[in-house]
Length: 248
Length: 388
Ligand SMILES: Nc1ncnc2c1ncn2[C@@H]1O[C@H](COP(=O)(O)OP(=O)(O)OP(=O)(O)O)[C@@H](O)[C@H]1O
Ligand SMILES: [Mg+2]
Image (cartoon, rainbow over all chains, first blue to last red; front, side):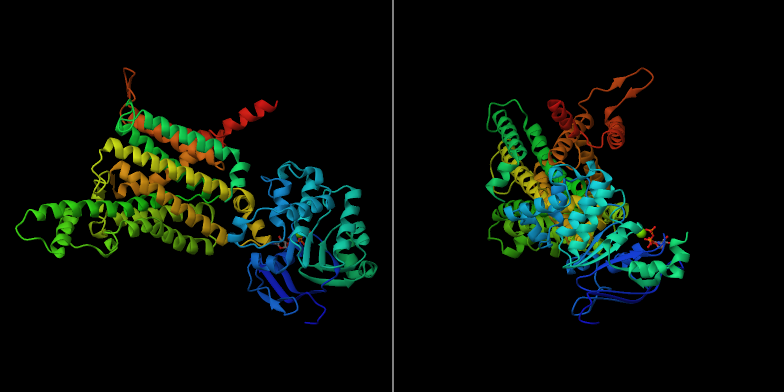
C-alpha cells in the first residue's frame, strides 16, 4: 500500500444467498481526497460501505487501513468507527427521541469507554463545539428540539453534523442530498469539498448535477465491481457507462 | 456525582422529599416509634413495597432506558434475599444451639456447636452437613458482600455470553427467562444446599436483637427508604448526561450507536450487571421483612410481574417505575389478601383472589396498546395542560 493511500480495498467479493452483490471490487482513496461513487440501483454502493464499516463481512478480499495497513476485516463496527471511519446512512438515522444537541454531543469525538462516558459532563468547549457544528449545518436554532420533530432535510443535516462531530479520517456519505432543496444541495457540496481538504470523503449520489459540483474523481459501480474511474466527463463519455447507467 | 447534579435535576429532590415525608409519617403512626394506627404487618408491607420500587428502578434502567427486556431480574432479587438469609439463619440458629448446649454439664466444643447448627438448619432436607456455599455464612460482612457479588457475577457471566453473541430482543428475553427457570428448579432440589422448597425462614428475627417486631419493622422501613433514595439518585445520575444518551440510543438503534464508535456490548454488560446488583440489594432488604424466602419467589412469573409494573407505571422514566411498582403491588396485596369483598352476582360470585390476575393481565394489554407511557404519562398531560 503506497504512502498516499488511506483505505485500500482489493479483490473483495460478497454474495447474499448466491447473489453476488460485490464482485472482485477494488478501490483506493488518499488521506485528503474527495471521491464520488455513482452507479445504478443495486450496483452495490451501500454494500461497499457496509463492508468498509464492518457491518458486512466479505467472502474474500482485503480491506486495509491507514499508514500501518491494518486489516479492518478483523475489527467490529465500533472499533472501525473509533479507528476513524465515519458514516452517514442512506436513510437518515438519528436518535429521534433525543434533542439535536444530545445527538451531536453523543457523536462528538471523545473517549468511548463506558466508564469515561458515565462521568462525562459537557464542558464549555464541548458546548461551543456542538453549537459550532449546529451552525455549520444550519441547525443552531433547533438545538433543544427533538430530532424526531425535524424535517427530512434537517435530519440529513443533523446526520452530517454528527458525522463531522466524530472527526473521522474517512467519511462515507450515502446519498446526502436526498430530500434537500437546491440551495441546501449547494451548501452540502461546499461543505463536502471543504472537509475533503483535510480528510478522505466518499460520496454516493445519483444526482449528476450534484456530482458535477463536487468536481472530483468519479468511480462508477455496476453489478458489484468498478466499471470506470476518472473525471466526470471521462466516465460519462465511456460507452459502457452510458449503456448501463446514463442511457436509461 | 456532584451537588450540581442534584441541583440540575429537581425531580430527584422532589422524589427524595416525598420519600422522606412518607417514611416519617409511617414512623409517626407506627406501633414501635409513634402514636400507633398502622399495624406492624402493614408497616412491613410498606417497607417491602419500597424494596419492590427499588427493583422496579433496576428494571426500568435495563428495559425502559436500554431496551433490554430482562425477564430475570427477580431472580437476582431472590438471590440477594438468599444471601442475606443465610447469615440470618446461621447466626440465629447459632445462638439457639449455644443456649441449648450450655445447659449441659461440660461446655460444648466448637465442633458440637457447628454440628448442632447443621442439624437444626438442614434437618428438614435430611442432612446435617454444611454445604460449601455456606462457607461465609458465619460472617455478616462477607455474606453482605455476597449479596452483590453472587448476583453480580451471575449477571456478568450470563450477559457476557449473551451480548457477545449479539442475542437481542425477544430471544434475549427468552434466554433470561430460561436462566430464571433453571435457577428456580435448581433451588427446589433438596440437595441444592439452600433447603430445597423449604427455603430459608425465620428471617424476620434478627440475631442478638431483643427489640420487638414493632421496632424492627421501622428499622427496615428506614433502611429500605434509604436504599430506594440512594438507588433513585444513582439511577438518575446514570441516565442523565451522555451515558443516558448512549443507552437510549442502544434502545432505539443499536447499530447506529456502534457506528458512532461506542462498544455497545460493554455498555449493556455494565448496565445489566449494575441493575442485577441493585435488584439483589432490594431483595436483601425485602426478605427479612417477609420473613421467608423459598424458590417459588424466583419463579419466572415474578420477573414477568416486574415488567408489568414498570410498563403500567411508565417505562423510560424513573418515577414511573416507582409509581407502577407501588401502585400495582399494593393493589395486588389488597385483592389477593382477601380484603376485597367478593361480589355475588347471584349466578356467579366474583372472587377477587382469582379475578385480580385477569384484571392485571387486561390492564397490561391496555397499557401496552393504548397508553405506552403508563401512569407516568399522566404527568405529561398535566405539563402540557399548564403550557396551553
Ligand atoms: N443484507 C442483504 N441481503 C440480501 N441482499 C442484499 C443485502 N444487502 C444488499 N443486498 C442486495 O445487494 C445488491 C446491492 O445492494 P446495495 O444496497 O449495495 O445497492 P446500492 O448501489 O446502494 O443501490 P441504491 O442506489 O438503490 O441505494 C442489491 O441487489 C440488494 O438487493
Ligand atoms: Mg444504496
